[in-house]
Amino acid sequence: MSTLFSAGTLSPLRSLSSTLNFHPNGFLPILSKSRSHSLIANSLLSDKFPTVAAPSTGPIPPSHLIEVVKTAANTGAQVVMEAVNKPRNITYKGSTDLVTETDKMSEAAILEVVKKNFDDHLILGEEGGVIGDAASDYLWCIDPLDGTTNFAHGYPSFAVSIGVLYRGNPAAAAVVEFVGGPMCWNTRLFSATAGGGAFCNGQRIQVSATNQVEKSLLVTGFGYDHDDAWATNIDLFKEFTDVSRGVRRLGAAAVDMCHVALGIVEAYWEYRLKPWDMAAGVLGSILGVVEA
Image (cartoon, rainbow, N blue to C red; front, side, top):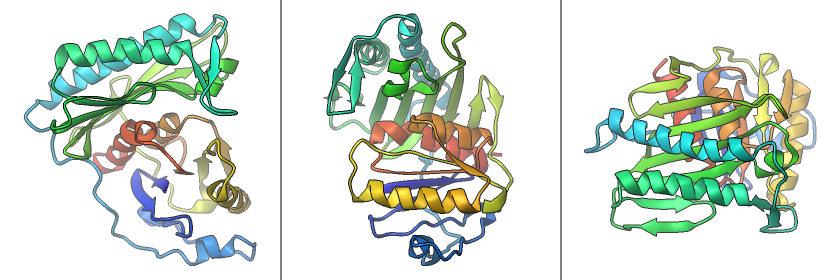
């Protein structure tokens, strides 16, 4: 699967052979004569996009839920901040897929906060897998360090990302983005609740009003597997680079989606995202336009 966030609207790509729905907020279709022409020219443009955000946060008041989510994200971020200028202990999940002790320590710290407040909730962590009550209406999707490769090199951007789903839809989210660089690291906190809008450091944010690709700055990402999806995205990268103001590749999906919500890029797409990659960022991106 691949996912596109354009001006805060989510349009999932149904399969590798599917084409980009690049039309929310009035984006114009891309027509070119390149070899990836068919990837875009055959796109079915529609004004109807699926509703992603949960209708509510359920029986837990949104103010309480988001405070716990933000506390958990900040707790994980404190662990990352303490390690950011220190030597890394790196291991590998695959040939190029890194994991550090900081990933594991951050997730452990986050889990303590979640379990202290909601010991009956289901949790999906990138490092620890699934734990908790499978019958729960709530699912916490935790990425304790999104952008581990960037972190390992001391290169921004990376983040701690937590999204809470209520009955399968995003209800509350927080992303702590690390900005700056070696010897000058800082953070900013993105947060959102269903029906409550999107915020950065407590200030309401909204997506860009730009609705033309040629006036847009775009962002994408590439997975670790150099498969058909990876090759397809290379073609899309070339295509959009040719017709937009530029395409950036930052290396942290949660950060990319927050940048859409913040309005500093117009759209983001990527293949092969995992739930913990997008559960938080998608809510902020959606609410950046819905609640603006």
